[in-house]
Length: 358
Length: 267
Image (cartoon, rainbow over all chains, first blue to last red; front, side):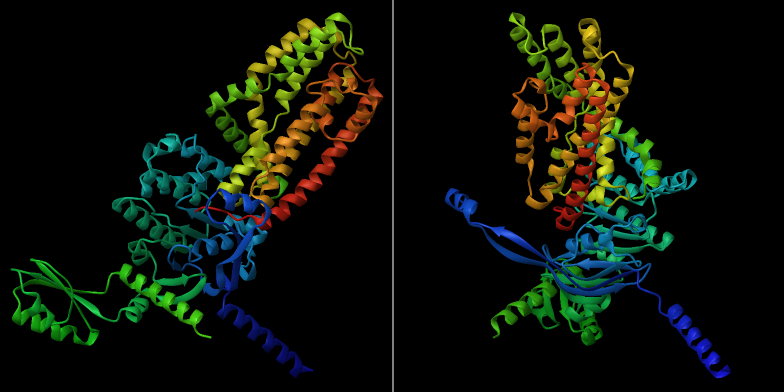
């Protein structure tokens, strides 16, 4: 009797420990699929007429079986070329789209049910769509969101002060939204999205179309928000500076299929293991001289960029210093844009090869 | 979203919706022009009745009827079908779906908040004219006016729900505005908007009893103009609210299933 009681206690404790040790991930996606039927027709009047009677559809696999998990407080870059399925995934995660198949959960909620508790925890900010009321000043949207999310007044004022200070909103909030510039609107858009302090933030190209300094402001702000509130962040962007500045981890998808999930540094090392040695030169140097040191990526009268294997970096540097009029030099990774386009190209080649193979 | 949470957010939603309605002054003016059809019909039917009364309608009765129709239409209008169609195809509905408030509730609030402003100019003019010209032909029983008030709410609800229902069809077929055109044509004919329902031949009148159109605007106008004694008024009100319930259930099902198909275009 005593033994079985003890066994029961131990089992319960074990379960308790297991539960405590391995918390559920904030976002969990298992074998997510979303296919669309798209009506296809040739251009022209005849084709238009024909399409009235007979339509041909083809299936677009926007997302075709992806799985990943994201822990609370992580900042993850979600990358892929246009049409890869990034936005579709974010829309499924925020409950806008119903998944075709697979399981999705965000902090224990099933997004497609759009429960109140779920909607209060998340926010999807789309760079190309807005929630600000077009004809009214952003302050009206802030106020509306305060009421809808039942944010207590004191917390609302505190949050708004904090957002105004970090985003330098100033008197933007009292101008009609339609009269704001794209960058000003994006700042207000972010502020409106964060009034209720969501724990999970999906950002779909938040810096699209913004100038360099505005991009930097938005980036800094997003990072601060994540650090201050421990919010989980998933970001898509075609600007690699965004990804480099914000996301220690990246998930890459292409044609609806996941092709990489891991650290950004590892990704760069895996796709482009070579380093770049950037030489700033005192006077123009012949290309033939540079060729002997490594693969010449670019050269002009004042600088040259060489690509060399990681192990050969120090040797290349010593030889360059000994033989060339070097004013200054730096060692860098290949630019992320190049890394990404090479990765996409590889996965495209792999897909083509798989299609050709019997 | 829970009813309590929606009602808590209601004052702010109404305030913003009202501010939005005020932002579109030109549109409001055009809306007013678009709803002056009853005044055209008023002139037309008065000319017809000048020779001899049509049924129980002499020139004074027609005046009261169409001025009442003008006021009722101003106060029970809805345009959500167009908005919903646009928002489904442009993906703007996503922003509503992200918020913890039912999009249908937010459409309703926007609709109701815009009505008083849209009616601000038109209704007082209509009401004064009605009082001066047709006071004697208005219903005199105070209890009928209570039934009338309930029928106004019912009339708006039917109009709104039909709008949401037809708007929600765009979730299934990309665009459903042609349905709205057909619905509006039938509304014009069968609601009493152009011709008082009681002037229809008996067969058509029988059919109209079983259609929703008359309960949108015809019934409130009939009650205002004393066309029905109290028991008949209450019977018709019960049918009207039966329509409200039936449409609520249909629209809820259409909406819920439609959202599964929502494609959230754009972005």
